[in-house]
Image 1 (cartoon, rainbow, N blue to C red):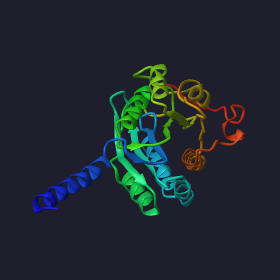
Image 2: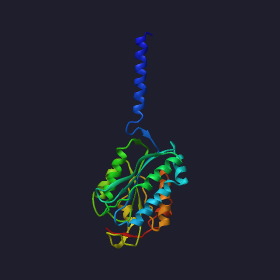
Image 3: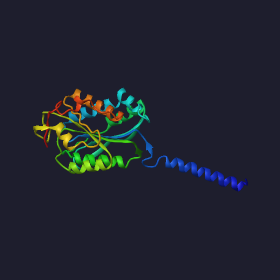
Image 4: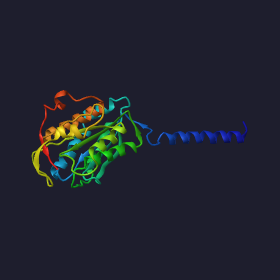
Length: 258
């Protein structure tokens, strides 16, 4: 081969190597086992101490050995996760952007980022807007996965924003499963009054959607931490909660009204 031919061959080889490297990082091309949005209610119906306990519960669960083992036990051994705090219809803020977790170091780093984020608040409970925002985050990220999940917590019914029927339709059309973590309390928050609301039923009837979607309610701080841990393990492993965890007869509790 001539010198010119060698130069052309080398140039073409370099081009294809570069093209391959670029294509490996195009949107939607990084494969993971699960894409998971942790969408956490920080409206004023959740008082500041409750908001901090919620976040601490997620941080502890994300860094737990059980969750890390569940991640590593998947076909690829990695998931993509983002932590978003929400309130009003225009208030959805990422405390930790999309991150791939495949090791204990990854999990601890992500948990630390969540723990260190500023805690900001909003007035209302716009569940539909939070779901729409989470669906958009999944559809616009750089990952692809066989399972797409929004894990949404909240301590009361929707009182502002996009109708839940429309939000659930968005999730269904994007093949996203929505699971619920109702945070049940008999006390009143800053902007709410306590009334009789079966919050677990409300989430079951109006919020969750998709194949295998479930509600796992929490009342006490200890129960909240356990519910977060259980939900993460179940969602990452692609399993189902036990019957007594999700049976409506198991947990009908009073929540908060708008």
